[in-house]
Length: 157
Image 1: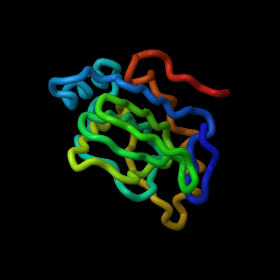
Image 2: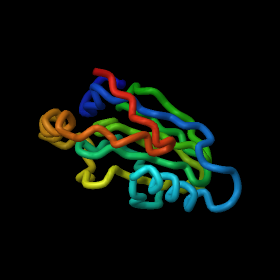
Image 3: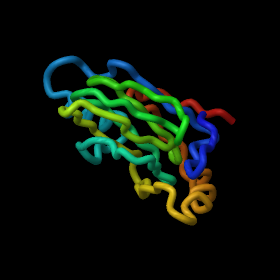
Image 4: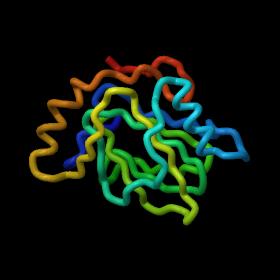
């Protein structure tokens, strides 16, 4: 779990999950990511990149699969840990977890997915957001599973 950082609340109960090489090499990794997420009940939602500003989703858990390229991602707000992700990697961010792109290769392609029925709003530090997030993050249902493996999502009680 990541501690709160400035305007970024992070999630007090659920850890970030990192799966290196979760997608097979070669072929259409974006389609492979979509199939993997769908198989575990996380409908694929988009193909794009990662915003360069800190942001988070207070009412939705997010799975990010790196389908092509490389990206350096900072988690949890200013001073938070930095991950270097490459094609094939999957990272799962619990509701409230801040993240931003610190730099990427020109060919970066990310596939995003969320558990069904979750409201995907993007917060980035505007006035009043932190207070609203503090109320909504604890009410967000736990992920149904780890979208990369299908195993139960670990919870710290």
